[in-house]
Length: 494
Image 1: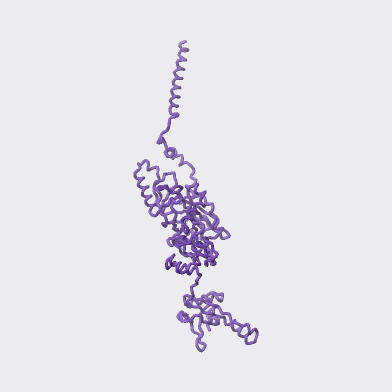
Image 2: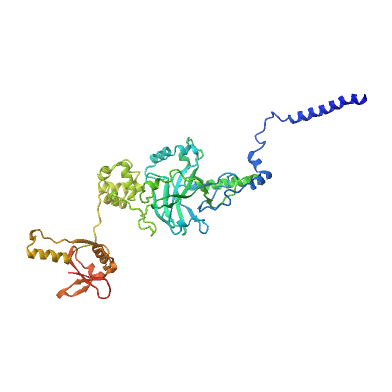
């Protein structure tokens, strides 16, 4: 009976304890968390999560990429550990990008000893601006006619071949390079991040850009369309020396932080390694339509002759060198780019071909200055530099055949001798040998000696000094004679 009376008491005690525990467990529900209650990044930084993260399969850690691109500019120290690096650049300053070959032995043997093509572009980092990239770039072009967003500094670059820039693609350049040789390309970015901000009341943060490099190999048809590798990095561009000030400000802010806070941020590295990414969707536009030779806004240098045995640069159409009156303002701008008058494109923004051709010599000199003005005027008028010496030659066999017809009375009224003009600039015997070899469609090595017939029929060896004393527009009849010592020929000027 006593045991039966104690049972409800025991149940009551147990029930009371359970209620208290349950109330305690619910005591925190509904309370408002403070702003500094916890941070998800702090939670992820706990040792237990770090341990689990280290046990995950390393997808990219052990993956060796075929190429690596290193931008020689320091990263910002004000970037958190798990965020992408950010690099500050100065507007118009040349920055080196090292093109490194990371292939293992025997990897990608099809490009060994051959060129690959890399396309560098500056694009928007924000997705919102990527959707309106075309409109953004057109607006920039309108505000800064004749300028480019991205340029190559060719004199400082090493190992690049056939650099090209499409006048319609202001943010893109391309070039060929040999992975087995040292290659460094220097780039210049001419737009600043604040030019694309939505509101401009002062003090706005500039939008970040991306530098992306896409590399392609040559296919069976000789076009560089087969994708090999792509990588990119995040940048912000400031006015000259602004990047240095921003880097210094970030460094000073980090020095003032507590040691525990510093651990949440990345250290500043001297260089920026571009990380692997997907190829740019429009990366093949260059292969579909050949772009003209490189023409930089601030540094213009001819690129002819930079070809290699494995790749011959695509020739630029010579017909485009002469500006025609029917050229539109856009075609006139392209003509100015091709002929290294890029600094004056902004002055002639709305000029058509007819407008430019109407300018007098005095007008052009007043606009562009004496040196560039005279060069532009001569280019507009299509003036060709007169050669130092012109001679006319005719093959003796042809002349003798025509003379024989004349003596026999066959076609006497229509007989005339055909001469070929040879233009000399260096006034050397070697130059004359090369020009005569072109005329005969033979190799210059097949011409052993060149003689000039002198008084009483003597043969005088032609030297540089003799050519320099030739009178302009002299006429010669060419006779050939087999050389005794080799398979070559002697040529006699009569």
